Length: 461
Image (cartoon, rainbow, N blue to C red; front, side):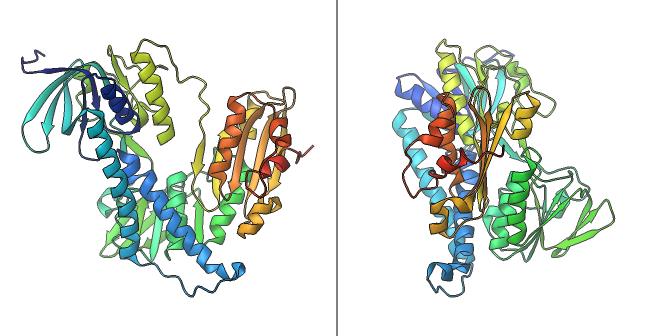
């Protein structure tokens, strides 16, 4: 395609303002280069607007509801806690709007050109932007970064799409708290919302088509967490495939393959996320996608087109904001002529249930499959003094260590503040320290991290 003469040439063109793209755009602009970042309107990206930040804000509210119910154990009489929907929505929106405004100011102060509109590639490294306030712009980048992210995917269950299902984004609009909620999909997102809405008063049923929930985790850790979810009133149904979903008035019926029928006020489709690539015109840019629509990249996050990169969820990276931030580091280095790779990244992840489940490195099953001669340590959270002071002793910590080298291969930490403690272990792993460094290190008392001293003495052999 021949591009008209009114095309604007810039040093960096970023399509989509997620964590990786916006950080790179600001850095590059601050360095004095000309940068255009195109964003459809979600200032700050998915994480701030409709994912990590609002969900964890509501997780905080749900945890407080559960703590209020056990306040007498802490010597307090608080009365009956109730959800005030307007206050709950205000809390979430205040957190989000504050972070959006911080991002907006950072964008302006960096000197980048933030363009609100929808970009479509019309040639290599060249987009036509339909501006939100009317008109168009043509922009060509010396380097181009695709960072358009993902959106909730609705599984192809007959009737599900027309039954007006909630998604991980729309459920946070908080128009009401359903009396009965069926969650289709027992992954991390589905479990977080299931426990959250159980705390808010919903009767929640989670449907998972697979034989067990959390299949990527060791069964002992997974079963411990699932037991706590059941204690909190969440019904968990595995090996259950939804055959059809029908909405009639205010009732949604979910018909299972085995003939059972579940009725609810709402159904949450927690069935994964789909990449935002369908309307980008990537063929014109010479950018290839896989069969699911994710942009194909190599280990340097380079696409099939010259000087065109993809980062974050849309590139098939693990769908965590901290991974997207690392994608930024990789692309920034490689644009500058470096050779930084995604190979060997030590990716932590956190499931913000109550208690939290945090993991980094290999599970026991993965370590044994790779041929490691392993030692396994397990510690009940009730053995950690800080957990007792919190009156929050549910949980299990597990460590996997290579018997020969004494290197930590991985940990799974189920318990309060696990998402903070796992960073201590990750740091030791990044430094190549043996497990004895955490066993013998002086860790402040009483903290949850202090439990690492005890964990690495709790061998099962």
